[in-house]
Length: 139
Image (cartoon, rainbow, N blue to C red):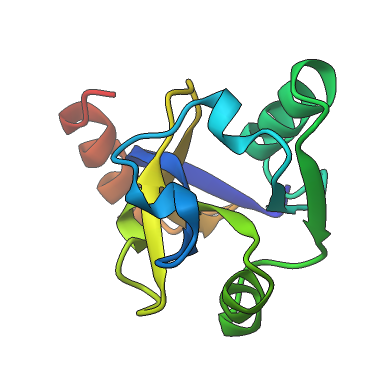
């Protein structure tokens, strides 16, 4: 890895879909709701958390079709979700990112860390800042 990462917290991993999708009416989803759907997911190796989600799908929920995305999400991926009526893995903090998609939480264990990326060899000021953060964050 070419950088350091200081976690600050976690986001819930959810599922986004069009407002017209039948699952958009639900307040919370479970695995059986996602059966026989196509789920947009970053390809393996981009996130260990999403790799764990993928592994569970491949092992225990084989009726879910995974559509691999090569790179990180951009507006074209959100539009693909809308146009094709696919489900898309997303984060709770992105719930209002695209006006045509609704984000719904899922009853699963997956959450994504968020935080600060900083240099592998940080400056002395950055080291002090990170040490201060570490003393004051309760994860």
